[in-house]
Structure formats: structure tokens, C-alpha cells
Image 1: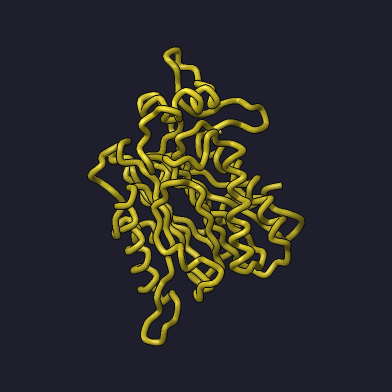
Image 2 (image 1 turned 30 degrees about the horizontal axis):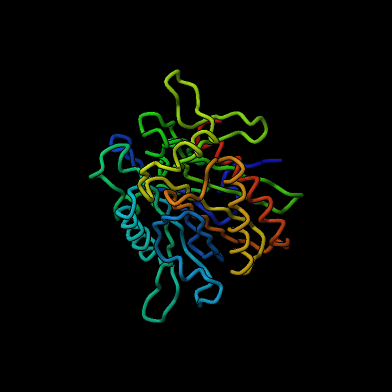
Length: 308
């Protein structure tokens, strides 16, 4: 069952904030965990744009992050992380190195430059504004934040695509355990409801109906001149279970199954699909349970992102 906001903010210690530029069709979303969260990451897309993800390797020293940024603007949008770092430093958060506290802010981007104004991208001021807007309350969904300029089903061209967006969902297991997800869906593939196998967003044919993903894959991925990185689904899954970095990494890996259940095709050379996993709290649960539920909750968040 779901209680609370049915969103990532159901995890105590997390706040979500958006910066949205509707006119330019771009934006960014920050997930704040100022006091720190154990984090892992898994990249499955062939053309990712990221920042600070090497330190999430379980063999690396830093254990906790202070925020995660999901942003539009392709590689240009990584500049928004500078604003998140500045906001965290001003408020006294970060990895204590003695002479300063260094905020740890991994980030991932999606490509929305062709949707609106390609000369307007999230920058440091946008990341800072997203932090100022962050709260532990209800999270706005749809074409907001990192999902502002998102589209899905682009194998027939952008003019045949459907809107993407940002979605979130949560699941309570028993009395105390919570798993949640937030995702910005900008996939080259189509979104399919796994319960009904109905296509709910994707490439449209001349008559307005949706093209079947198998037809798109066989006819267009073979010869299409698709721009690498011009798509990408990026997400955060989180739990109040206590996980190690290794366990959080496994949860991020398993959560990708949730994307594969609802997006077809996924993880192509033209996608930069990246999932972060965050652990806050002290609940006891196996990483395999958290990963399995994270995949289910992420699937739900994808459907919510495109309006289902």
C-alpha cells in the first residue's frame, strides 16, 4: 500500500525541489539529503552524462552524498550542480575535510535541447533555485523540473513523439519499511503499461495511433541515424533501510529492471539511462528485497511521469 505523499519525499530526510523554465522547455530537479545518505549508482545507457559518480564505487572513500541532481540541458546542464554545491556549503553541509565542508552532489543529465530553446539550459542559478524550492511535501509531477522538456518515442522523429515527464511513487512494506522512486523519462522507446500491455506514450503513426515498439525496433534501430545521448531516463530510488554502498549499488542495478518493464527499447546507445540509489534510516531489510520493490515502484513512477 501507499501512504504519505506517494513520492520520494515519503523517505524521512529527503527533500525534492524543481526549477522549471516552461518557455525554454528545460529544468532541473534536486533531491536533497543534507545530513547525508549512503548512495550507489548504476549506468545502463550507452551515452550517459554524469558528474561525481566515480566516488559512488563501493571501493571509494566517501560514504555519503548530500544531494543528487537530475537535470535537462544535456552536458551543459551539469553546471546546475554548482548551484546545489553552493547552497549546501552556505548551509553548512558536506564532507568535512578540516578546512571546509565539501558538498557531495552526483548528477545525471538528459537531452532536451531539441524540444525548446537549445541556448537555455539549467545553470548554477537554476540548481540553487531548485534547492531553495525543495521541501519534504508533495512533489509536482509531469513536465516540471528535469522532466520539463522530456519526450518519449522518438524513432520516427521528434514531431511524432509523445510527451515524457517526471514522476514519483512510493511503497510501504509492513509498518516501517519504505521504498520510493523519482524518475525523469526522456526515452527513445515507448512506454507500455505492463498490466495491460497498452502503449501509453510513444511514436505516433500518420493516423495518430501508436507504432508498436517491436516494429520500431526492427525497422528503425537497424538503419536509423540516431543521435547518441539525445534521450535518456534518469532516476533516484531510495529507502529508509540501512544499506552499505555495495548494497545500494545492487539496489540501483536491480531498479533498472523497472525501466525495462515499462520502456521498450531501453538502455540503447542513444540513451544515457542512470539510476541512483539512496539509503537513509536504520530499518533492517535485505538489499534484494529493496531492489525488487524499487523496480516495481520505479515502473509506477514512469507511468505517472507520462500521465498514467
